[in-house]
Image 1 (cartoon, helix red, strand yellow):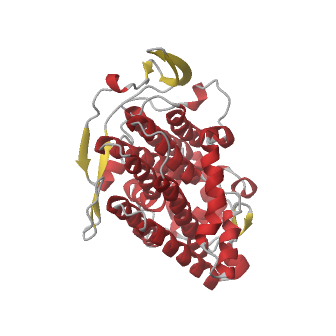
Image 2 (cartoon, rainbow, N blue to C red):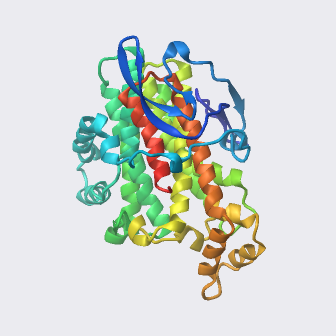
Image 3 (cartoon, rainbow, N blue to C red):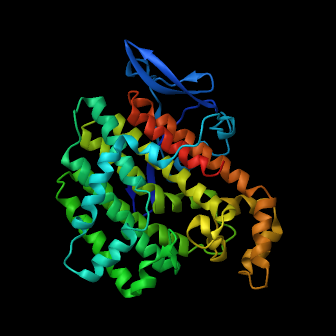
Length: 418
Protein backbone atom coordinates (compact mmCIF):
# COMPACT_ATOMS: atom_id res chain seq x y z
CA UNK A 1 0.00 0.00 0.00
CA UNK A 2 1.16 3.51 -0.78
CA UNK A 3 -0.27 6.21 1.42
CA UNK A 4 -0.59 9.70 0.00
CA UNK A 5 -1.76 12.96 1.45
CA UNK A 6 -4.70 13.62 -0.82
CA UNK A 7 -5.89 10.11 -1.51
CA UNK A 8 -5.10 6.72 -0.05
CA UNK A 9 -4.78 3.87 -2.48
CA UNK A 10 -5.27 0.24 -1.60
CA UNK A 11 -3.82 -1.62 -4.56
CA UNK A 12 -4.98 -4.99 -3.30
CA UNK A 13 -8.63 -4.08 -3.72
CA UNK A 14 -8.17 -1.19 -6.18
CA UNK A 15 -10.13 1.10 -3.92
CA UNK A 16 -9.15 4.74 -3.83
CA UNK A 17 -10.30 7.20 -1.21
CA UNK A 18 -10.61 10.44 -3.13
CA UNK A 19 -11.70 13.80 -1.82
CA UNK A 20 -15.22 14.73 -2.89
CA UNK A 21 -16.54 18.23 -2.49
CA UNK A 22 -20.25 18.87 -2.05
CA UNK A 23 -21.28 22.29 -3.28
CA UNK A 24 -23.59 23.99 -5.69
CA UNK A 25 -23.76 26.97 -8.00
CA UNK A 26 -25.93 28.49 -10.64
CA UNK A 27 -25.19 28.16 -14.29
CA UNK A 28 -24.58 31.36 -16.20
CA UNK A 29 -21.22 33.06 -16.06
CA UNK A 30 -20.48 36.71 -16.60
CA UNK A 31 -17.29 38.72 -16.21
CA UNK A 32 -17.43 41.50 -13.60
CA UNK A 33 -15.06 43.80 -11.78
CA UNK A 34 -15.20 43.75 -7.99
CA UNK A 35 -13.67 46.51 -5.88
CA UNK A 36 -12.41 45.38 -2.50
CA UNK A 37 -10.50 47.57 -0.05
CA UNK A 38 -9.20 49.84 -2.78
CA UNK A 39 -8.14 46.97 -5.07
CA UNK A 40 -9.85 45.98 -8.29
CA UNK A 41 -10.13 42.31 -9.17
CA UNK A 42 -11.43 40.53 -12.26
CA UNK A 43 -14.03 38.03 -11.18
CA UNK A 44 -17.00 36.03 -12.42
CA UNK A 45 -20.58 35.76 -11.37
CA UNK A 46 -22.25 32.36 -11.40
CA UNK A 47 -25.92 33.18 -11.85
CA UNK A 48 -26.87 35.34 -8.90
CA UNK A 49 -24.00 34.12 -6.78
CA UNK A 50 -20.85 36.24 -6.80
CA UNK A 51 -17.69 34.20 -6.32
CA UNK A 52 -15.33 37.01 -5.26
CA UNK A 53 -13.76 34.51 -2.91
CA UNK A 54 -11.76 36.82 -0.69
CA UNK A 55 -10.46 34.60 2.06
CA UNK A 56 -12.35 36.30 4.87
CA UNK A 57 -15.66 35.62 3.08
CA UNK A 58 -15.14 31.98 2.17
CA UNK A 59 -17.54 29.55 3.78
CA UNK A 60 -15.99 26.26 4.81
CA UNK A 61 -16.47 23.56 2.22
CA UNK A 62 -17.45 20.17 3.60
CA UNK A 63 -14.88 17.54 2.65
CA UNK A 64 -15.45 13.86 3.20
CA UNK A 65 -13.82 10.59 2.29
CA UNK A 66 -15.50 8.20 -0.10
CA UNK A 67 -14.61 5.38 -2.44
CA UNK A 68 -13.49 5.88 -6.02
CA UNK A 69 -16.74 5.31 -7.82
CA UNK A 70 -18.69 7.63 -5.53
CA UNK A 71 -16.01 10.31 -5.70
CA UNK A 72 -15.75 10.22 -9.47
CA UNK A 73 -19.55 10.15 -9.81
CA UNK A 74 -19.94 13.09 -7.41
CA UNK A 75 -22.79 15.21 -8.72
CA UNK A 76 -23.42 13.04 -11.79
CA UNK A 77 -27.08 12.50 -12.52
CA UNK A 78 -28.27 14.19 -9.32
CA UNK A 79 -29.05 17.48 -11.07
CA UNK A 80 -29.60 19.18 -7.72
CA UNK A 81 -28.12 22.40 -9.06
CA UNK A 82 -27.74 23.81 -12.57
CA UNK A 83 -24.30 23.50 -14.09
CA UNK A 84 -22.27 25.75 -16.33
CA UNK A 85 -24.21 26.75 -19.45
CA UNK A 86 -22.05 28.21 -22.18
CA UNK A 87 -25.02 28.97 -24.41
CA UNK A 88 -25.97 31.75 -22.02
CA UNK A 89 -22.55 33.33 -22.43
CA UNK A 90 -22.29 36.56 -24.37
CA UNK A 91 -18.55 36.90 -24.26
CA UNK A 92 -16.22 35.95 -27.08
CA UNK A 93 -14.59 32.50 -27.15
CA UNK A 94 -11.50 31.95 -25.04
CA UNK A 95 -8.26 31.41 -26.95
CA UNK A 96 -5.32 29.49 -25.55
CA UNK A 97 -3.00 32.35 -26.48
CA UNK A 98 -4.96 34.76 -24.31
CA UNK A 99 -5.52 32.19 -21.59
CA UNK A 100 -1.79 31.50 -21.24
CA UNK A 101 -0.73 35.14 -21.59
CA UNK A 102 -0.18 35.59 -17.85
CA UNK A 103 2.29 32.67 -17.82
CA UNK A 104 3.70 33.22 -21.33
CA UNK A 105 7.23 33.90 -20.07
CA UNK A 106 7.14 30.77 -17.92
CA UNK A 107 6.04 28.66 -20.90
CA UNK A 108 8.72 30.17 -23.13
CA UNK A 109 11.39 29.19 -20.62
CA UNK A 110 9.88 25.69 -20.40
CA UNK A 111 9.97 25.26 -24.19
CA UNK A 112 13.62 26.22 -24.22
CA UNK A 113 14.45 23.73 -21.48
CA UNK A 114 12.38 20.72 -22.55
CA UNK A 115 14.62 19.25 -25.20
CA UNK A 116 17.81 19.90 -23.24
CA UNK A 117 16.56 18.11 -20.11
CA UNK A 118 15.41 15.10 -22.15
CA UNK A 119 19.11 14.56 -22.80
CA UNK A 120 21.22 14.10 -25.90
CA UNK A 121 22.86 10.77 -25.09
CA UNK A 122 21.10 9.00 -27.95
CA UNK A 123 20.40 10.93 -31.17
CA UNK A 124 17.60 8.58 -32.25
CA UNK A 125 15.73 8.92 -28.96
CA UNK A 126 16.31 12.66 -29.01
CA UNK A 127 14.93 12.87 -32.53
CA UNK A 128 11.86 10.90 -31.50
CA UNK A 129 11.27 13.24 -28.58
CA UNK A 130 11.67 16.28 -30.83
CA UNK A 131 9.03 14.86 -33.16
CA UNK A 132 6.33 14.99 -30.54
CA UNK A 133 7.57 18.08 -28.68
CA UNK A 134 7.42 19.93 -31.98
CA UNK A 135 3.99 18.59 -33.00
CA UNK A 136 2.05 21.58 -31.77
CA UNK A 137 1.12 20.48 -28.27
CA UNK A 138 -0.94 22.91 -26.21
CA UNK A 139 1.36 22.69 -23.13
CA UNK A 140 -1.83 22.69 -21.08
CA UNK A 141 -0.41 20.71 -18.17
CA UNK A 142 2.68 22.85 -17.57
CA UNK A 143 0.50 25.95 -18.01
CA UNK A 144 -1.71 24.63 -15.22
CA UNK A 145 1.36 24.08 -13.06
CA UNK A 146 2.42 27.71 -13.60
CA UNK A 147 -1.09 29.12 -13.04
CA UNK A 148 -1.57 27.20 -9.79
CA UNK A 149 2.00 27.95 -8.72
CA UNK A 150 1.53 31.68 -9.14
CA UNK A 151 -1.99 31.72 -7.68
CA UNK A 152 -0.90 29.85 -4.55
CA UNK A 153 2.36 31.81 -4.33
CA UNK A 154 0.27 34.96 -4.01
CA UNK A 155 -1.79 33.24 -1.33
CA UNK A 156 1.25 32.53 0.85
CA UNK A 157 3.20 35.70 -0.01
CA UNK A 158 5.88 34.27 -2.34
CA UNK A 159 7.21 36.93 -4.70
CA UNK A 160 8.25 34.55 -7.48
CA UNK A 161 8.26 30.91 -8.50
CA UNK A 162 10.91 28.57 -7.20
CA UNK A 163 13.18 26.34 -9.25
CA UNK A 164 11.08 23.39 -8.06
CA UNK A 165 7.92 24.90 -9.54
CA UNK A 166 9.64 25.17 -12.92
CA UNK A 167 11.17 21.73 -12.77
CA UNK A 168 7.79 20.23 -11.86
CA UNK A 169 6.24 21.74 -15.02
CA UNK A 170 9.02 20.23 -17.14
CA UNK A 171 8.65 16.82 -15.49
CA UNK A 172 4.88 16.84 -16.04
CA UNK A 173 5.25 17.61 -19.73
CA UNK A 174 7.88 14.88 -20.15
CA UNK A 175 5.62 12.32 -18.48
CA UNK A 176 2.68 13.40 -20.63
CA UNK A 177 4.77 13.17 -23.80
CA UNK A 178 6.06 9.71 -22.87
CA UNK A 179 2.49 8.54 -22.30
CA UNK A 180 1.43 9.84 -25.73
CA UNK A 181 4.25 7.95 -27.44
CA UNK A 182 3.19 4.72 -25.72
CA UNK A 183 -0.52 5.38 -26.32
CA UNK A 184 0.08 5.72 -30.05
CA UNK A 185 1.89 2.37 -30.09
CA UNK A 186 -0.91 0.62 -28.16
CA UNK A 187 -3.64 2.24 -30.27
CA UNK A 188 -1.70 1.73 -33.51
CA UNK A 189 -2.32 5.38 -34.32
CA UNK A 190 -0.65 6.79 -37.41
CA UNK A 191 -1.33 10.46 -36.68
CA UNK A 192 -0.93 12.69 -33.63
CA UNK A 193 -1.79 16.40 -33.81
CA UNK A 194 -1.87 16.13 -37.58
CA UNK A 195 1.64 14.66 -37.84
CA UNK A 196 2.99 11.14 -38.16
CA UNK A 197 3.48 9.41 -34.83
CA UNK A 198 6.86 8.40 -33.49
CA UNK A 199 6.31 4.70 -34.12
CA UNK A 200 5.28 5.43 -37.71
CA UNK A 201 8.53 7.29 -38.33
CA UNK A 202 10.98 5.23 -36.30
CA UNK A 203 9.25 1.91 -35.69
CA UNK A 204 7.62 0.41 -32.62
CA UNK A 205 10.88 -0.57 -30.94
CA UNK A 206 12.28 2.97 -30.97
CA UNK A 207 8.93 4.43 -29.92
CA UNK A 208 8.67 2.16 -26.88
CA UNK A 209 12.28 2.89 -25.92
CA UNK A 210 11.76 6.63 -26.41
CA UNK A 211 8.75 6.57 -24.10
CA UNK A 212 10.62 4.48 -21.53
CA UNK A 213 13.59 6.81 -21.71
CA UNK A 214 11.43 9.87 -21.06
CA UNK A 215 9.66 8.19 -18.14
CA UNK A 216 13.05 7.29 -16.67
CA UNK A 217 14.50 10.75 -17.25
CA UNK A 218 11.48 12.43 -15.68
CA UNK A 219 11.74 10.08 -12.68
CA UNK A 220 15.37 11.05 -12.18
CA UNK A 221 14.53 14.76 -12.18
CA UNK A 222 11.58 14.03 -9.91
CA UNK A 223 13.81 12.32 -7.36
CA UNK A 224 16.09 15.34 -7.37
CA UNK A 225 13.24 17.56 -6.22
CA UNK A 226 13.71 15.83 -2.83
CA UNK A 227 10.10 16.20 -1.77
CA UNK A 228 8.71 12.81 -0.75
CA UNK A 229 5.08 13.85 -0.96
CA UNK A 230 5.44 15.08 -4.55
CA UNK A 231 7.57 12.08 -5.51
CA UNK A 232 4.84 9.71 -4.30
CA UNK A 233 2.17 11.79 -5.99
CA UNK A 234 3.82 11.83 -9.42
CA UNK A 235 5.08 8.24 -9.21
CA UNK A 236 1.51 7.09 -8.67
CA UNK A 237 0.55 8.78 -11.94
CA UNK A 238 2.88 6.52 -13.93
CA UNK A 239 1.27 3.48 -12.33
CA UNK A 240 -2.17 4.92 -13.06
CA UNK A 241 -1.30 5.14 -16.77
CA UNK A 242 -0.69 1.41 -16.86
CA UNK A 243 -3.81 0.68 -14.80
CA UNK A 244 -5.88 2.74 -17.22
CA UNK A 245 -4.56 0.92 -20.27
CA UNK A 246 -5.19 -2.46 -18.66
CA UNK A 247 -8.70 -1.44 -17.64
CA UNK A 248 -9.45 -0.24 -21.16
CA UNK A 249 -8.03 -3.34 -22.85
CA UNK A 250 -10.04 -5.65 -20.59
CA UNK A 251 -13.38 -4.01 -21.38
CA UNK A 252 -13.34 -3.63 -25.18
CA UNK A 253 -16.76 -4.20 -26.78
CA UNK A 254 -18.21 -4.77 -23.29
CA UNK A 255 -21.69 -3.23 -23.38
CA UNK A 256 -22.12 -3.82 -19.65
CA UNK A 257 -19.40 -1.32 -18.75
CA UNK A 258 -20.66 1.14 -16.13
CA UNK A 259 -20.23 4.89 -16.05
CA UNK A 260 -18.18 4.58 -12.87
CA UNK A 261 -15.78 2.22 -14.69
CA UNK A 262 -15.44 4.71 -17.50
CA UNK A 263 -14.73 7.54 -15.06
CA UNK A 264 -12.16 5.48 -13.17
CA UNK A 265 -10.39 4.63 -16.43
CA UNK A 266 -10.53 8.32 -17.41
CA UNK A 267 -9.04 9.24 -14.03
CA UNK A 268 -6.18 6.80 -14.52
CA UNK A 269 -5.43 7.86 -18.10
CA UNK A 270 -6.04 11.62 -17.96
CA UNK A 271 -7.15 13.17 -14.68
CA UNK A 272 -4.52 11.60 -12.43
CA UNK A 273 -1.66 13.52 -14.07
CA UNK A 274 -3.55 16.83 -14.09
CA UNK A 275 -4.57 16.43 -10.44
CA UNK A 276 -0.99 15.60 -9.45
CA UNK A 277 0.25 18.62 -11.43
CA UNK A 278 -2.01 21.11 -9.70
CA UNK A 279 -1.55 19.66 -6.22
CA UNK A 280 2.23 19.41 -6.63
CA UNK A 281 2.39 23.07 -7.66
CA UNK A 282 0.49 24.10 -4.52
CA UNK A 283 2.76 21.95 -2.33
CA UNK A 284 5.88 23.70 -3.69
CA UNK A 285 4.27 27.06 -2.91
CA UNK A 286 4.00 26.00 0.73
CA UNK A 287 0.18 26.24 0.74
CA UNK A 288 -1.63 24.56 3.62
CA UNK A 289 -3.25 21.14 3.37
CA UNK A 290 -6.78 22.41 2.67
CA UNK A 291 -5.55 24.39 -0.34
CA UNK A 292 -3.47 21.56 -1.79
CA UNK A 293 -6.49 19.24 -1.47
CA UNK A 294 -8.69 21.70 -3.35
CA UNK A 295 -6.07 22.07 -6.08
CA UNK A 296 -6.11 18.29 -6.40
CA UNK A 297 -9.92 18.40 -6.73
CA UNK A 298 -9.64 21.12 -9.36
CA UNK A 299 -7.17 19.12 -11.43
CA UNK A 300 -9.07 15.85 -11.06
CA UNK A 301 -12.41 17.26 -12.18
CA UNK A 302 -10.90 19.40 -14.92
CA UNK A 303 -9.13 16.27 -16.20
CA UNK A 304 -12.33 14.23 -16.16
CA UNK A 305 -14.19 17.01 -17.95
CA UNK A 306 -11.43 17.22 -20.59
CA UNK A 307 -11.60 13.49 -21.22
CA UNK A 308 -15.38 13.50 -21.60
CA UNK A 309 -15.14 16.42 -24.04
CA UNK A 310 -12.45 14.60 -26.04
CA UNK A 311 -14.72 11.56 -26.21
CA UNK A 312 -17.60 13.71 -27.45
CA UNK A 313 -15.41 15.30 -30.13
CA UNK A 314 -14.51 11.83 -31.38
CA UNK A 315 -18.14 11.67 -32.58
CA UNK A 316 -18.67 15.26 -33.66
CA UNK A 317 -15.46 16.36 -35.37
CA UNK A 318 -13.67 15.28 -38.53
CA UNK A 319 -10.27 13.64 -38.71
CA UNK A 320 -8.82 16.95 -39.93
CA UNK A 321 -10.19 18.79 -36.89
CA UNK A 322 -9.06 16.10 -34.47
CA UNK A 323 -5.62 15.58 -35.98
CA UNK A 324 -6.30 11.83 -35.84
CA UNK A 325 -8.94 9.42 -37.21
CA UNK A 326 -12.50 10.21 -36.08
CA UNK A 327 -14.72 7.60 -34.35
CA UNK A 328 -11.57 5.61 -33.59
CA UNK A 329 -12.55 4.71 -30.01
CA UNK A 330 -15.85 3.08 -30.93
CA UNK A 331 -14.30 1.29 -33.91
CA UNK A 332 -11.77 -0.32 -31.55
CA UNK A 333 -14.43 -1.25 -28.98
CA UNK A 334 -13.48 1.42 -26.45
CA UNK A 335 -16.90 2.50 -25.14
CA UNK A 336 -16.88 6.09 -23.91
CA UNK A 337 -19.49 8.27 -22.20
CA UNK A 338 -21.68 8.99 -25.27
CA UNK A 339 -21.94 5.27 -26.03
CA UNK A 340 -22.56 4.25 -22.41
CA UNK A 341 -25.45 6.72 -22.17
CA UNK A 342 -26.89 5.68 -25.54
CA UNK A 343 -26.79 2.01 -24.56
CA UNK A 344 -29.27 2.76 -21.80
CA UNK A 345 -31.91 3.56 -24.44
CA UNK A 346 -31.12 1.54 -27.55
CA UNK A 347 -30.89 -2.26 -27.51
CA UNK A 348 -29.97 -2.42 -31.18
CA UNK A 349 -26.78 -0.51 -30.42
CA UNK A 350 -25.75 -3.31 -28.06
CA UNK A 351 -26.26 -5.91 -30.79
CA UNK A 352 -24.12 -3.97 -33.26
CA UNK A 353 -21.28 -3.38 -30.80
CA UNK A 354 -21.23 -6.96 -29.55
CA UNK A 355 -20.92 -8.11 -33.18
CA UNK A 356 -17.71 -6.02 -33.29
CA UNK A 357 -18.98 -4.27 -36.44
CA UNK A 358 -18.67 -7.38 -38.55
CA UNK A 359 -21.18 -6.15 -41.14
CA UNK A 360 -20.47 -3.42 -43.67
CA UNK A 361 -21.88 -0.09 -42.53
CA UNK A 362 -22.53 -1.26 -38.97
CA UNK A 363 -20.05 1.20 -37.46
CA UNK A 364 -21.75 4.13 -39.18
CA UNK A 365 -25.12 2.84 -37.97
CA UNK A 366 -23.82 2.63 -34.40
CA UNK A 367 -22.52 6.20 -34.58
CA UNK A 368 -25.92 7.45 -35.74
CA UNK A 369 -27.67 5.58 -32.95
CA UNK A 370 -25.37 7.19 -30.36
CA UNK A 371 -26.31 10.61 -31.71
CA UNK A 372 -30.04 9.87 -32.03
CA UNK A 373 -30.37 8.41 -28.52
CA UNK A 374 -29.05 11.50 -26.76
CA UNK A 375 -25.66 10.06 -25.90
CA UNK A 376 -23.85 13.23 -26.96
CA UNK A 377 -26.15 15.53 -24.96
CA UNK A 378 -25.89 13.48 -21.78
CA UNK A 379 -22.11 13.34 -22.10
CA UNK A 380 -22.12 17.13 -22.45
CA UNK A 381 -24.03 17.36 -19.17
CA UNK A 382 -21.45 15.11 -17.51
CA UNK A 383 -18.57 17.28 -18.77
CA UNK A 384 -20.29 20.40 -17.45
CA UNK A 385 -21.00 18.82 -14.06
CA UNK A 386 -17.33 17.94 -13.62
CA UNK A 387 -16.34 21.42 -14.79
CA UNK A 388 -18.68 22.94 -12.23
CA UNK A 389 -16.96 21.03 -9.42
CA UNK A 390 -13.55 22.16 -10.73
CA UNK A 391 -14.62 25.81 -10.67
CA UNK A 392 -15.87 25.55 -7.09
CA UNK A 393 -12.53 24.11 -5.98
CA UNK A 394 -10.89 27.45 -6.79
CA UNK A 395 -12.80 29.36 -4.12
CA UNK A 396 -9.88 28.93 -1.71
CA UNK A 397 -7.70 31.16 -3.92
CA UNK A 398 -7.61 34.96 -3.81
CA UNK A 399 -8.85 36.78 -6.88
CA UNK A 400 -6.07 37.31 -9.41
CA UNK A 401 -5.33 36.94 -13.08
CA UNK A 402 -3.92 33.51 -12.31
CA UNK A 403 -7.12 32.28 -10.69
CA UNK A 404 -9.03 33.78 -13.60
CA UNK A 405 -6.78 31.79 -15.94
CA UNK A 406 -7.63 28.58 -14.07
CA UNK A 407 -11.34 29.38 -14.39
CA UNK A 408 -10.95 30.16 -18.07
CA UNK A 409 -9.17 26.85 -18.62
CA UNK A 410 -12.39 25.13 -17.53
CA UNK A 411 -14.46 27.34 -19.81
CA UNK A 412 -12.09 26.84 -22.75
CA UNK A 413 -12.61 23.09 -22.44
CA UNK A 414 -16.40 23.40 -22.45
CA UNK A 415 -16.36 25.79 -25.39
CA UNK A 416 -14.95 22.97 -27.49
CA UNK A 417 -18.41 21.35 -27.42
CA UNK A 418 -20.55 24.47 -27.41
